[in-house]
Image (tube, rainbow, N blue to C red; front, side, top):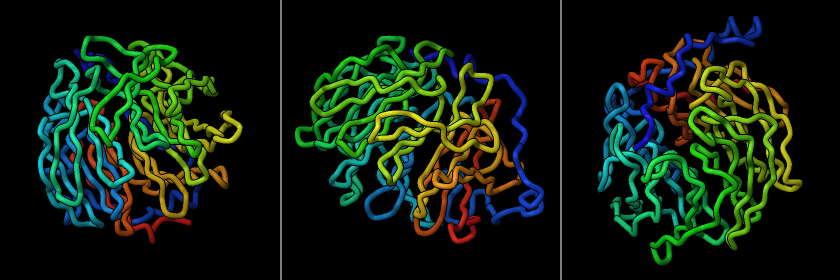
Length: 372
């Protein structure tokens, strides 16, 4: 069974915004609407869900916990296009803390997760087909798991790595999903058991796995690449051991590692960049405030929007080395929210607060209003 969320909740006061210039303090930023028209309150009332960009530019929102305390998951799924949202076919199983990976053919494979607080990790897997708006159950995971990493490999298969295992405790196992046969096969072992590992596809067809918890509340600075042929190569360490961070593939092929925590108390404002060519890490822009349990999305202009773990939304510009707070309003801190871009709008959806109560926040920001 997974550890209680309450046991690992950060027992600290809400973070205070820092790093704002006098100019940014006087500029309230773009108008941000909570649960705007078109984003129903029932859609915003969730956390530990997934939001996956589809090939047609819409966003697929899947599952998540839907009660305060985050003890009960849902099987509903939604499509968001711009400011419009509609429910689509429900999952076969309720789940949160699962993975959702876009396949090369446009379908989405959803794996593992949890059905409720205190229950074993799920081994069920299902695929969403946007053409039919239907879910199809496929072969089960070899090892039921939640809070794991997942990334598309260059041969079209999906790497599932680490996580909290159905048998109890963190796991170092990986497995490979083949969408042609809709089956799993064992993958290579990781250097150590790890949950919450960041995963990102790389230009060479391999995947980066970085950071996470090697035991409850203990971070790792380990980073490896896993290739389709099963080769595991150590490319770490990270510049800073971290977990509950965001891992973001960039258009350049590099990967941005954002925020997280080293001890479940101090939130990290640091970022680092994995250089896909040299296979090394270098410092990235500093956030305006430390963040963890955060969501991230790449904007059309290449900047990265992040939110969660602290109030507000900020934009990371890797090219200039700066991070800018977009919305200076004191929003409720939303942990385990998600971000996505659709129809010229940045959507920030869901999450829970320091008491693990759902924030029920749905933010919609026109991309044209974002500071340049």
